[in-house]
Length: 218
Image: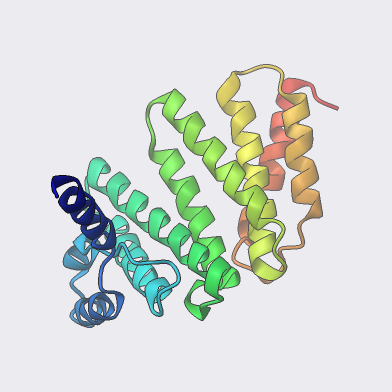
């Protein structure tokens, strides 16, 4: 009897780990309308990725956290926390797209923002080892997104090149020609004109060339 009760409690707990997506989405929409980003950022949005509205729920929280991260008077620690919230939820929105093709998670809309925020989060990290780890995460995510067509794929190539460049720069002042060649190759495959990463691609090309010259790379 005790074993049966224990199993029942475990199954109940497992079933209770997800939120009521419809109800929580209504709460999130109300908070977004009220411009209460702080409360929206704290909302439990752990929904099943296949639930109707799950992508919208994660995107609403991602956008709220993104707005919080942009507050000019926000201290570094809560800014990093807000960026982690935004990137985690944008990733979840893309995961919903992979499973359901929910329009809220279209890669062309979400991926360029996600990658730029991942880079921003990396650039805020003071600890070099942690920054390098965040840069690797950016590179892995960019590589996966680079296979997409349209603006998402262009963002993947450009931010992948940025991650390759930063990996070289973080490793020290010398060497890294192979990594710079990889960065140039990724950027060379991109055609970002008219996309959100057009300006980034231009500055990145200069950065790669400067690094090659400083390190004696052909």
